[in-house]
Amino acid sequence: MHTYDVTLTISPEMPVWPGDPSVDIHRVAKIEDGQHANVSHIQMGVHTGTHVDAPYHFLKNGETVENLPLKILVGRAYVVHLPDSVDLITADTMANADIPPRTRRVLFRTRNSKQWAKGYGSFIEDFVSINEDAAELLAQRGVKLVGVDYLSVAPFGNSVPTHKILLEAGVVVVEGLNLGEVSQGRYNFFCLPLKLANSDGAPARAILMGV
Ligand SMILES: [Zn+2]
Image 1 (cartoon, rainbow, N blue to C red):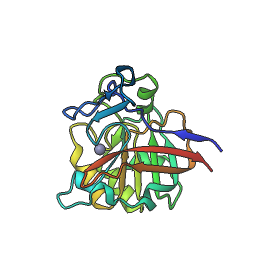
Image 2 (image 1 turned 90 degrees about the horizontal axis):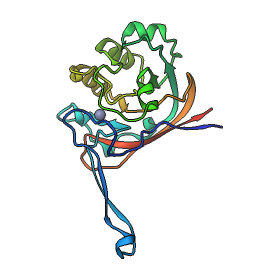
Image 3 (image 1 turned 180 degrees about the vertical axis):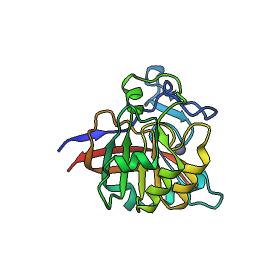
């Protein structure tokens, strides 16, 4: 049974959302300086790399990340591999994508994952994302978790509608997956965000296992 690590490695070189804090990891204690152990300090935004959005990210009274249901974050998922020609995931894209009925977790592999294969560069604005219609359709179909392979589920410059629709419907949003090695099909998905108190999001380790 193959295990796919679909998590981005957190490093100072990785692109972050414009305006969000960049990643800093540095040692504050060093063995080579005569100390007993190496100890590192990290500084980053909670929406860094592979991460989960809590409802509180876009909803004033929404749930915070430590209360997201693990039942949704772990379980059977379907990876949809969309052709590189898809620039925006719409209701039409979904109709053509052949997602099995009763799918509760959907991960969209798009041309975004090719960005990760190239290594970390600067932030790109024209990433593939989900529009309002597709978000409505996902919620209507009873999908409980949506994963995307760039840093936002919503189009650049229009973050609010897609996020609000999904988060209001109780859909867990996972962003920044690297799905470049994963072919279309069913998997077991494990996504465990850090248990940060009162946070609007948290970095997560995410893996897929063949079924
Ligand atoms: Zn986010």
